[in-house]
Amino acid sequence: MKREKIEDDDSLTLSQILYAKRFDLTLDRNLCTGCVICALACPREAITLKPVPKDSEGIAQPPLVDIDEEKCDYHAICAVTCPFGALKIRVNGEESNPAVEKEAYPLLVRDIEIDNERCDPECTICQEKCPLEVITVRFEPLSPDEIEERKKKGLPDTAKKTIVDVKTELCATCRVCEAECPAQVIRVTKFFEGSIDITQELCPEGCQDCYDVCPVDALYLGEDGKIYANDMFCIYCGACLNVCPRPEALELSRTGIRHTPIKSGAWNKALERLTSTEGMNREFKAKRAAKAIDAIKKLRTPKSEET
Image 1 (spheres, rainbow, N blue to C red):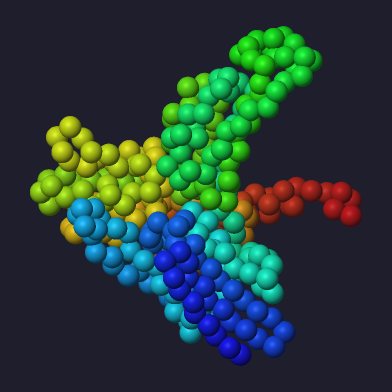
Image 2 (cartoon, rainbow, N blue to C red):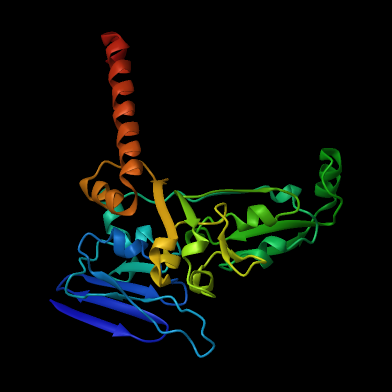
């Protein structure tokens, strides 16, 4: 077995080369925001965050993610959980999710609904406002029949149809596009549930480090010069906490995660690290309730129907 670690300004790649298989885990530093999710999810504690000094203008910088090549087991739990799609794993050159394929870990549910028909003609606001630049708007000509059909439906008069493309795997479900859409035709459901609160009285005078590193515009500078949180946009990734010089001033918690169905000890342990005890208990309670309902249904099902 051979292990390699290659790093530059744009990426970090770990490789494990076996006789019959090759595993490559790659971190795209251009997509990584220095949040804490991958480090919390990793069962091997192979991921750490390296502090980065402020730039020449005094703007706080997110930490650099580092991965210990001796601890990494290439199960891709970090890649599955990354809100920003910055981590990818390949097995023999093909993109793969070993933990998901082995049913040891769920996928995050990214619910993004866009009614392209009702988009305002020539509107590109969602593309312009997306803080992660994962939305592209394009326009294609409508056929005469399509134009007539739009008129019957009472849709905006236009000779072009609007098509909004979202790179779903890179979307952190911050809901900025939903809030900014003038036609209100976008619906986004976050995959992390939680809360964030800033106690301004505890913030160091003039400090805006959390604001500098927030990847989704969930923090803003008030007229009084203090930082405030917009809970609607916050994805609870923890990037702000990583740079806060006085962590007691910033309270952030994840209370739930929307994911595909799973029964796994690995997921239970990750859930415990990623969420509060309240959030973990809530999910376990929901699972127990679902099992009870299934059991009752089976008891009520006549044996003739079971066969």
